[in-house]
Amino acid sequence: MNAPHPLNAPATPLAQAALVRPRYDVELVAVSKSYAGTAAVEAISLRIPKASYCCLLGPSGCGKSTTLRMIAGHEQVSSGDILIGDRNVTDAPPTARGTSMMFQSYALFPHMAAVDNVAYSLKVKGVPKAKRRARAREFLDLVRMGSFAERLPAQMSGGQQQRVALARALITRPQVLLLDEPLSALDPFLRGHMRGELKRLQRELGISFVHVTHSQDEAMALADLVVVMEAGHIQQAASAREIFEKPKTAFVARFIGGHNVISTARGQVAVRADRCRLGSAGSQTSLSGRATNVEYLGPMVRISVAAENGLDAAALIPDELFFAAPVDIGQAVTLIWSERDAHPLSD
Amino acid sequence: MLTEVSQPRPKSFYFLGFFFLLFLAFLYGPMVVIFILSFQGPDGGMSFPMVGHSTLWFQQLLSGTGRIGDIPSAFVRSLEMALLSAALTAAICVSAGMAFRRRFPGSGLLFYTAVSSLVMPSLFVGFGIALGFKELGWKTGLFTSGLGAQLTWTLPFGLMITFATIGRFDRRYEEAATDLGASGWQRFRDVILPIILPGVIGVALFGFTLSYDEFARSSLTVGTANTLPLEIWAMTTAATSPVLFALGTVTTVVSFCVLTAALVTIAVIVRRRAGGRRPATS
View 1 (tube, one colour):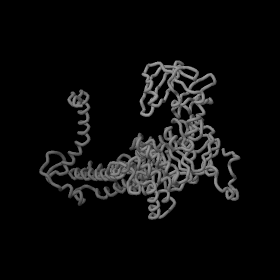
View 2 (tube, rainbow over the protein chains, first blue to last red):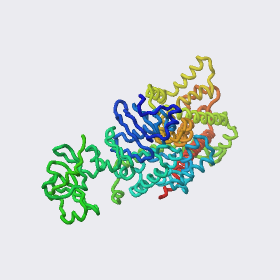
View 3 (cartoon, one colour):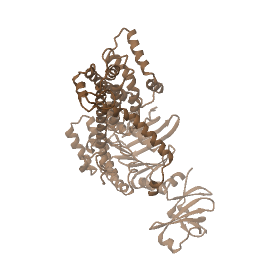
């Protein structure tokens, strides 16, 4: 199950002392997970550099939550190795990994006040009550929930519960904080606000956050490293900018949004919708069809196009440019783009 | 919205409503009659009409006079027995419920073996236990064969309620506790038990009332010391005064008190957990 891997540094005291700093906060080496013969995650390998914000992004059922739970130790790997800070923790229990998890819908203990929820990890270690509560208050202050210490979870809003859950996870001093869909239970306004808060905490604490999400906006806004997953595989792991500018596969281009995936003579290419213009088929690469929808988005106008070859595409055009030559729904249009904006995709 | 109210009710409503009233009459009618007759006047008999009214029969009951046998001792025995049954039922069922959270080889068979006790003829279960004790040369007794016989009745019920309670328990609470470093016992004591506590009180309540009322399985297994239902049964064949009704009223009141206490406790826990007010805005 745990075949020694060349990347796995020997855990002798001498070797450990020689390691000044671990190279990666999290390293997955050919990690697989299958349930009764069905693979949920297949041989994924991933390195999360020190102190980075990593988002596991993908549609539901792509294996991102399973991956997170395997890093946390709440799920056993079927094969492969998990390293945290260069230490092989594949078979270590959740508490011995240096990770801490913030659960979806937070899982705050409903019968304990906020301060006791946060202090719980100290309680099980046998820290005296006054001391652990004082420490818990410090962490509640860190997430700006100091004045809610005595509230029960039911007396707090979703956003407040989330902050308490964060404090509860952080008080264990994790090297890696694992967040399972942390923003999905919040309303859109709060979501944007908490997004900034998570990033602030991650930078302040200088630890790694691994954040599971199905929202590309969230991943793009937060992550230093975006990991796009599909059907138990990693499709692409790169910076948000690289993912958006150079999507590797048609799946990534479609999932990340804002791209047209177009079949050409030399294979599939991705063209960003905001690099497309309306024009007439000339020397430039083009796609003709009919406008099926025109959406005014403020700074931009989005024109959906049903192409003659059956493809759906869209152009995102600055408002000035659009209103200089407006089109209506149903009108014949031609999308044009320059050759250097066509990014080739691998299969 | 209003048209909904003004529309005539279908015929089935009246039919089912009548059926429900019938059910209520059968359920509470006899208790009401017994309650009224327990205040029968000193010269009145065991049936209507009421000849004045008095609390004479309650006085007789409490003082132990008036040909009523050993009711106070039987009451104490029943109470002890019911409390013990409640405690054991809750403890055993919660342990079993925790074990059954994970399927294990034979778990289905084990479950059905345990709950099939519900469909066994009670009198014969009691008879069999008494016979078994006799064969082994042991004496039947209240807290040996009697307790065992009652547990064969309370445990399957308790088990099913416990499964429902634990089935609703969100495993993420437990994973969160594990993540925070809690050991198995700490998880159970600090997180699981407090969260499922209302359900556990419900299980104990079932254990109590089923035991307090139990007749068929107890009748042959309690040895020489009768529980309250057995004592009352003996009285119905012998006693001929309204003191029997006074007894019926008192035991019903005791049952209701226990039930109310349990429900109030559950309500308090649930309300406290809900925070007693609406969630604050951030």
